[in-house]
Length: 214
Ligand code: DX5
Ligand code: ZN
Image (cartoon, rainbow, N blue to C red; front, side, top):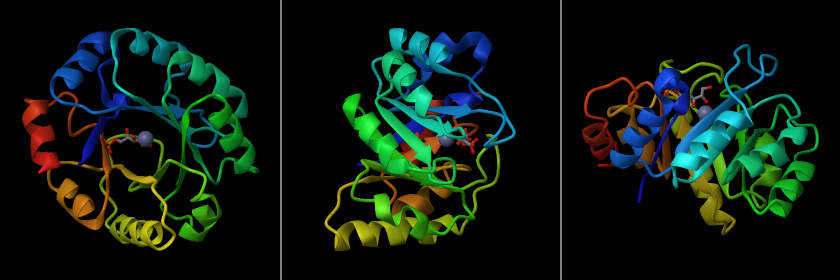
């Protein structure tokens, strides 16, 4: 089964409650929440307070993607705010093990991700530890960028590794996912599709999600 995780970065922040409800009613499985620090990536987004407010109005699993340099101090605040998954960037954390231990102590699920230009080998040591591997199919930092086709090979490789090593992480893909690119990534083995600009501010997100899932 394919899961769809609308990326709130593309939502209209003036009407966040309406946007969340619309995605929920349109069939979203998770909500994807992009946290940016202006350092690891040039852009800034939102923090635990906004997530806590969203948590009050939605029961959907909250999938937090930390594009933050050494975000250790943020793990607890995000757990308190209602996060279900916390994904860290391998390039942003010197000692990922410390993060995974803390995330599991907090009773949450953990994910690892990497920039499109970072070799896949960098995350291999952590595959046993994580519940989710996020394949970035754009350079992290902004919504609305074009899908990078190279990510398809990565998804396939992660699927093979999962089978070979008898692991069970979910493969999530993030960046440039729309009703066209969804086809290629799901065929390659993606389990969770993040989509921002293809769902928010568009007519009939329900129909779009259905098409993506197909
Ligand atoms: C980019 C973020 C993505 C972004 C995706 O750094 O991680 O989640 O919101 O946006 P779209 O779907 O518009 O490429
Ligand atoms: Zn993201």
